Image (cartoon, helix red, strand yellow):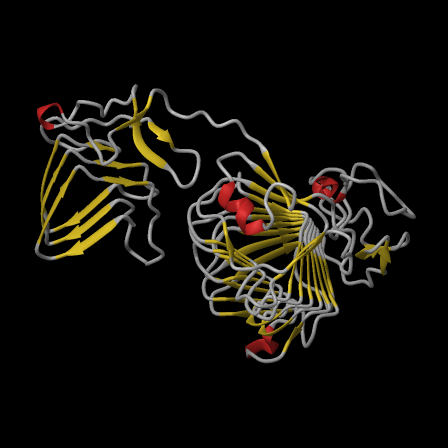
Length: 441
């Protein structure tokens, strides 16, 4: 939210209010200017590129003239056109106007609209680049701060004692140079957040082009990764381990693929927590094992709609309290709908699944210890093994081989060796399905 006022009067002149996010409060849809019962006078200003409503007014009187308003606004001299700032893709952003800006000389009495004035001939066109850590920037934090839209931060193998890392709306890729091979693989980039509340946190409107991948994120006092509303970053090929506030918290529509989430602890959702109704995550080809929480040892879901767990292993997690046994594998509460397919839910304690209060979970073509109703579900020892450091791989004679949804497509990889392999039908578990190629280097 850019600016909020309740009651009184407000005068704004030659000001730029740009690219603010919708606040995480229910029933408030406002990104730029939010006023309740206010007499507002705005001139020669830019209000542009906000996530939610550009202007939200309740019981207010607004006199807006000679302004550039995203989406338009009635008033003398108002326009609705891209301001063409000098350096929008990078942070800190240069919000001065380029020579080509429609805001130049477009204000009252021929003044420029906005706070910046003219600062360049043409808008800066950023060429995506790779920032190496530690050769270009000594720390991950410095590399993120130096990043612009489309950049890649590439992190060499080693231990980085950093945390509380935020992208601050930068749609960039932060990636380790090497793919982690297994839970204990330290020959990669390890973000050790032992002195911090979390490892990485996404708090603004970072979208799917924002990527966190090929990292070990460990030992935070809170969660390893937090993706808060409205952020929806892509999280791939990460090992999230040993965090004391849980592994991953996803409040939006992130896609989490090819990750190992293990050895984390929390009050709710030791492995992954999905706590808000806005959350519509896609959790695909992941291993969630050996996590502990009061409820939802592996996975905690509350008020989520239309989320998906596909080709995952939820194994060996523990819930220590809660109704219905707490849901050692996962626990669902409060009006949520969630689909689970082609997955294995096994050997969790004290039970595999706990549900409470208007929960609709649809599980199909999955192996659930103790059984669960649904098309194609089985209850049979999956015959797990460790293969080249990868946990919860199927042995060649596993009943989960070629037992996934026949409509989901073939497996994306041809390992580990299979006793019986129908190339047209997916396996259950983290290394099956067409998305399994996420595990390839």
